[in-house]
Figure 1 (tube, rainbow, N blue to C red):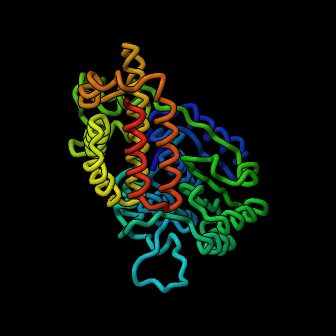
Figure 2 (cartoon, one colour):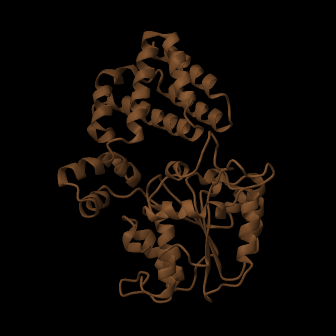
Figure 3 (spheres, rainbow, N blue to C red):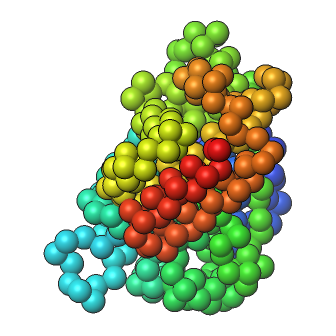
Length: 377
């Protein structure tokens, strides 16, 4: 994995290279920024750069040394991954899963490229309405690994993806590691929601903030890497709003957001007609989704509420909708206005919280449907 494979983020890449050049690499870093901006891709590239023995003329990992060869296979003994896991059937009742239990699935995920989502990771695992977490056993295992001397005589890199998924015990044990870091160890934490981390963990890291990928960088990547024609690439780059994952979703004709749009349209139409019987069926249908998928759907609903509200201002530069979303908005947007936009958004945020806390999904969604009836009238 090389810096040249990261889309945009030139300022961050230059800053990371300079840290190495100045021999001032922090022992712990926290990569934060908007969803889909390439935080994990940059973390993978930086880990590769730290472990490479010789850098090329472009100030990137050489991709030729023994260390680079091991990193390409994600088998470098001094590169340790931590990521959310689930408990599988057949595991003992008191067993707490660790990342190594899913090493084969993780390599499959990485083999698909450096840009991926939690949803894609969960699809590789046998999830049955479970929420993924990082267990205290993972923190213990990481402590054991990092206590061992570097096998290659250089850095040991601990790359923690989504540290906010740690439970309280795991977070407290990680804090101890950050307070007394093992020799030659660099922690790289990649977070979507850093506000959910312990303040004491945040205070012991150097935060690296990422910006959204520029529209032009996404456009260039679509044309050069994906072979998309220029007109389509411009439209997708505009809609993606700096989110490479959203740009990729637009290339996928069967992407999940089309299902979510259908569910949103159904909810709004049934709520407008005050069809409580059908809304109950709608609630039961979405209650059958896994919790992670339900949260993604509610997040998508929040975005559509915002987009429909902004559509009323008739300023194209304020809207980021697909053609299908805009077709629905032409007739629906007038129902989202100053009198209900905040309350609908707050209700969706509350539903996300409730689902995240394992509330009964059927009740949460039926309550949302009834609330929507009141706010559309």
